[in-house]
Amino acid sequence: MKYFENIEDVNDYYNIESKHPLIDIRRYSDVIKTNSSKIETTVFDFYKISFIKNFNGYLEYGNTKFNDENGVLYFVEPGQKYSCTSTKPWEGYQILIHPNIYKKYVSEKKISAFSFFSYDVNESLLLTEEEQNTVSLLMEQAWSEMNNMEDDFSIPIVLSYINTLLVITERFYDRQFSARKTMCNQLASDFYKQLKNYYKNTSEFSNKEQPSVLYFANKLNVTPNYLSDVIKHHSGKSALHNIHEYIIEEAKILLITSSQTVSEISYVLGFEYPNYFSRLFKKKTTLSPSDFRKSVKSI
Image 1: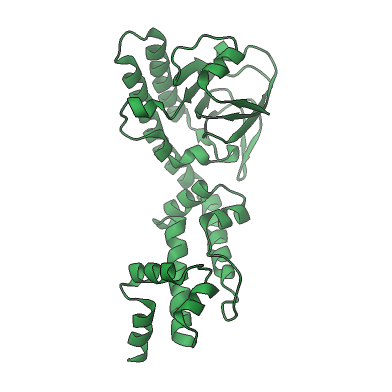
Image 2: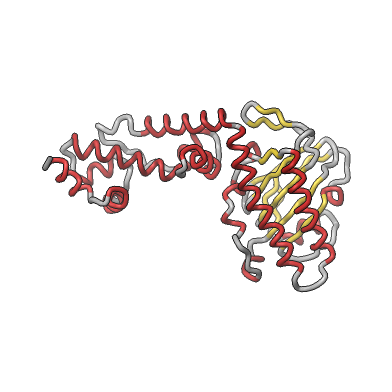
C-alpha cells in the first residue's frame, strides 16, 4: 500500500513538477499515459477530487450498470483507502487539496464540511450530460488558472472554482437521490427496520450500546455520511435525528409502562451515563424523564 503525506510526493512519484505545495490540478492525460493501468491501494493525507469523462470500468450502483457513456465524479478524504483499475487512459481532471491551504486562504465553505468526501466508490456521483459539461467547465477554468498562476489572486480564484464545484455537487447528489428513489426508499426502509429491531427486547436489561449512525451504516453496508444524507433526503431529518427521536419514543414507553428507575431505563437504552440520557430527553421533550413520568401519572 502506498502512502502519500503531501502533494509534492505524489508529483515526484509521477515525475511532474509541483505548482503549489498545498493544491494541485492535473489532466489525467498528463498523469496516466499507459493503455492499461492498475493503481494499488493508496492513502493520501489530503483530499482528492476526480472527474472522469470516459469511465471505462464497471460500477454497480443499485441496479444501475455504469459504463463509458457516463461521467463520474468521486471524492477521497484524508486517510481513506483508494484503488482503481483502468483498461484505457482516462480523460478528465484530478484535484488534490491539502486541508492546510484553508489556514491561509479563506473559503466560503471549508472542504471538510462536504459530507460526500467520506462516501465509498459505489456511492460516486454519476453525472448526466449537462452536469458533466458543468463540471468539465469548472475544472477547466480551475486548471487554466492554476497553470497560468499570474499573480497572488490565482489561488483564491482556484479555490473559488473548487468551492462552486463542491456546492453544485450537493445539488447533483440531491438529483441522484431522487433519480434512484426506489433504491433510496429501500435503504431508508431498511434503516427504520433495523432501528425498530434494535430495541426489540427493551423489556429486559441489555448490554447494547446506544445506537449510532455508524452501527446502522455498517449493518446496511454504506458509509455513515451517505446513510445520513439519504435519510435526510427521504425524511427531511438526518439519521442521527431519527435515531434520537426513536430513542425518546422508546424511553417514553418504558417510563409509562415500567417501574424501572430513570437510570435503569437509560442503561436499557444503551446510555453509559444517565445524565446524558436525561439531557437528551429534556432537549427533545422540554421535560426531564422524572417530570414526564409524573405528568403522565397525574392524568
